[in-house]
Image (cartoon, rainbow over all chains, first blue to last red; front, side, top):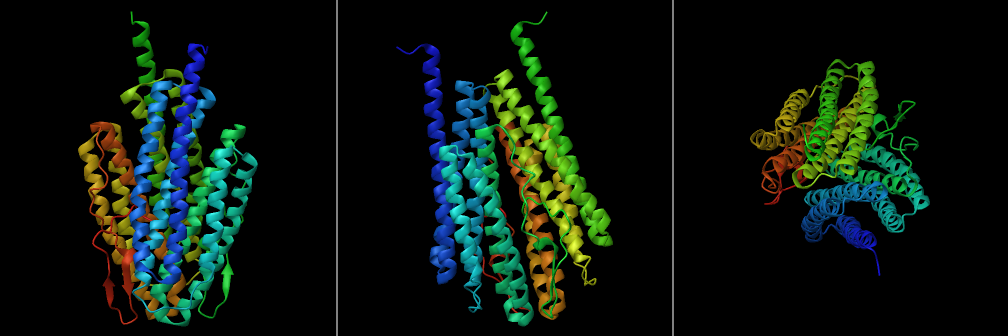
Length: 254
Length: 254
């Protein structure tokens, strides 16, 4: 027969499992919101984009549920040390996923705006970048479920590739704008869409840092090479793109 | 002589006070980072902008300190109900302030990029918008210190004005781009600077929502009229700006 203390421990584990399930569900929803938003962008389908905007509410509801579950877990089970760290990490991860959902919603809103302008030269790099971010999100969730710090490190490094794609897109879109003023409005929306996707990658790396900390007790941040140097980009109308990045372009996304 | 339980309660209060002091210090730093970044922008002073980029590290260090203080407080004092709510809110507020610091850093980075391009028509609305956001941040911190939910509601509503200024700026900057392709690179950086400032306002409203919840136990979100309709803006080269905002342009910032 289990002792009282074992009983408490088991309740904690079950409730933590429930909290984790909420988070995994949130993550799956945010991932599918991004996929649908990009689908809507490529097909110029405003109805589909509206569905993404609607789904964001469900993610918000789940975040509140996760917050409540975490606070109840702390209050009722009074976890110590590692257990407490788990719950606090869950709170942070839920907040990052909520932001990813918001960003997917913003992609959908910009898609609706884009559909009001004539089709322009498509920026093929956007769906490519979105695919990469989606696969990063998927691996991040898997790493969370399995408490796999190696996979978390892998995710963390892959965000660099997202940043590089974004920097390339930034130059490309500015060049389109310079070619024809009619491209300015659509390209600006595409620029913000690309920025939103790039920031989803940043939130995934935040989550990866939390997973790493949970699994190893050590911090992962501050050592990542950053590939998004677009804040420092100067593109001139004669198509000369200059990268004036400083020596230390560390940033946490924008 | 205080009983054991009173003694614990008093330790909790003192430690919570210490945690709050870290948060207020973080907030003051983020506020002054924004002020300095805008100063650097107006004066085209890259050295000043670099100082802002440097200070962000201090904000990050303070956030880690706040996180640690909160986790220790929960582990050692095992607070219940309202006290636990206080600590969880502090965690969330610290994370919002850290994001505000990041955004100020991004403004500074874009300022350095802008200084590599010839001076263009200044967007006077940016310092105006930054002033408003700074005053909102100040009032938010005051509301936090005083647990003043009325002031939090006031802050929450004032963010609408920020969103409206941003939407105006979005149109203005797109018009500049259409006038002369040489304006495209600087105007794009200004657009991102404006977006960064607008998002600082969003983080301040997140904090206001937390304060309101702390003070009243009720949620404030979901009822705010949103003024940033720029995601839905279509600006055409003949200067006709059309607002195609849907009926429900609720968003959480971008």
